[in-house]
Image (cartoon, rainbow, N blue to C red; front, side):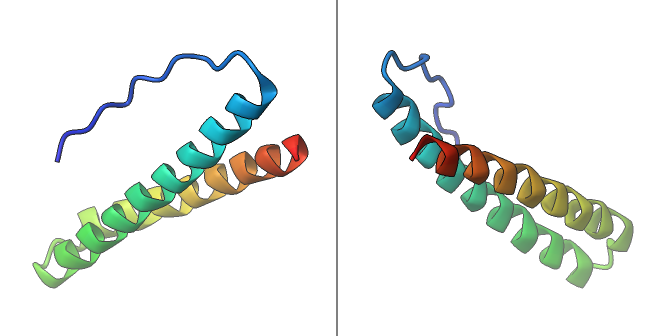
Length: 75
């Protein structure tokens, strides 16, 4: 389940755009994983934790939408 999050800062706008696109997709994957975990917690009777994860996913989605806007601005 572990994966590397180390990224160097790209040196060209094209590389920056590619990295940002990758990070947006990566963030969406994490948001989906958290959403599924929240559903499992809810089914396990851990409503408070599930609710907090749902809030976190909402904020992640909002942040990622802004990152997507930044990506669009690079195109």
